[in-house]
Image (cartoon, rainbow, N blue to C red; front, side, top):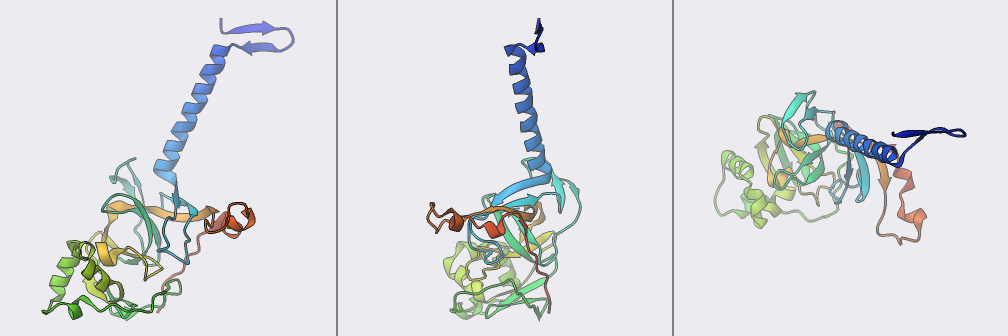
Length: 254
């Protein structure tokens, strides 16, 4: 029998039944975490300064996986698509080259013409006011057209960019930082850039982001630490002013 009656305590569970209860609780918790992480919320840690000063290194974020679509767990196969990123969205996605999670800002949507001239961003021929973008390096690298000994058409430039040549060649990579394009964002793809424009590994270099790699959008900071501070100075190590705060979004304006 699994139970025996105790006059003072009523029905008491045996050790075997307690073990079953613990196993059941643990399995339920694991399944719940799996479902939540796969379909609803995912945690993400900012590991680079490419989105400064909007996102800081060692910001811990909760990411809304349902913002754009539902996907089959551990794959890029969509179950249902709800919406697509728009200009200004902060997006968490899988880096197309090795699958690492990245976070950048959506700059261009399918069909947009993207160009950077002397660090100034142009979308469809218009410059935009970007209050979130920062430039910390006063140097300006020349465009690819200036460093090549021959003329290059827009079509050839587009092909080089789409084929990943800007990422594989360090000389071309440097030229694309401050003077880039024009290129047209392909169908079902998006152009991503970090807010820290002089220190961001983004679509200027590795190309357009295919829609299938998009995970979601960050909701709130749930924790944040500044590892440059000594560990015993907890009041400086932990960025208390960021904990449980919503991610601030800023829209584009002319």
